[in-house]
Length: 432
Image (cartoon, rainbow, N blue to C red):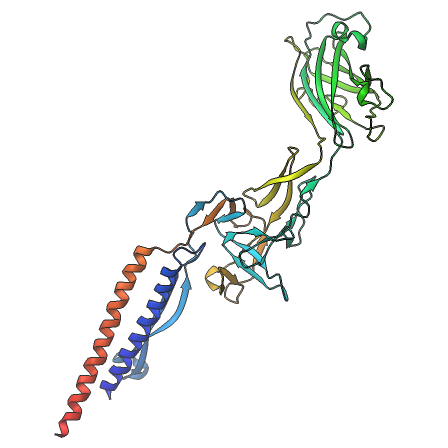
């Protein structure tokens, strides 16, 4: 009887409205959940029968059913937190997590509120391990296999200087110095003097004086000296030459060649015979350069405008930072910054097909496709934003409007049931 059908139709409407209210309530409950993605119920009508078969028309509906629930993967607002271990993704992609126990199940998340465990590994709030790539701290090149992001050591050993770069201008207006250079009277026999810092193999810093003197037009000699108290076999208070060399320039002031004529660097308490490359720039002959990127000989005062060396003392990790490509760099107490690891991101062809695991995590599913794993900012993957968290994309105003609409739908379907009930009661009363 069609009146009974109306009862079942009304019930389907109540069930659908209840499901819709559950989805809306879930969105509202997670409005403050980090990186939560709002869900939307998808409903479809139900056909009871076709009165004219395949000819169409005169079809009777039997209400509504919940066909599916779709997650809306729009970007949430990025909120600064000023916490070093907080990360967000601007654009498409997911952080990769591995369960620390059992079979190491892999999951994916947009929630970047990470922390460190007792082994120095970056983890999610539930202890899952963040995945990424190992990075060579010297070259910055990353490996290709995924592994736990871990700070294996909070200290770095000392490194003795192996190269020192000095970019200077030597005044071509200086007259040729006929006197032989004398270290004891360097203030009179040198045309230009500057100080540099060199680290020995134990990481101890030493002040080294560089003396330059003009031998002829376009040709300068230099020597490096340190106090004898810092040198093996040296005498306190007596400077000693540890290296010397020669620079030549073209007539237009470009660096033509830079040669090291002698080097004998043996600091007290450190490895003897330390090799240091004194580099004065992009010389034409020695370094096959243009002669313009480095030291020059122009008609202006002698001065040093750049000085770099690669040695440092031992240091402790004091802070870390993450750039947009997901490279995690550590800052140490000795002023050195070096890459430690690189975060990996995963991208899916269909984010809406991912399976929700709870705890702000997703799992690969058939409809999502396989993850495309790689570096941030490549192949459609978004960029990593440090000291930031992604907010929920729930629009509360929109959810409240949908709640009111769902409530009205529920009330209307309840009226269908009460009206059908009254009609059935009238039919029962016909026998009286």
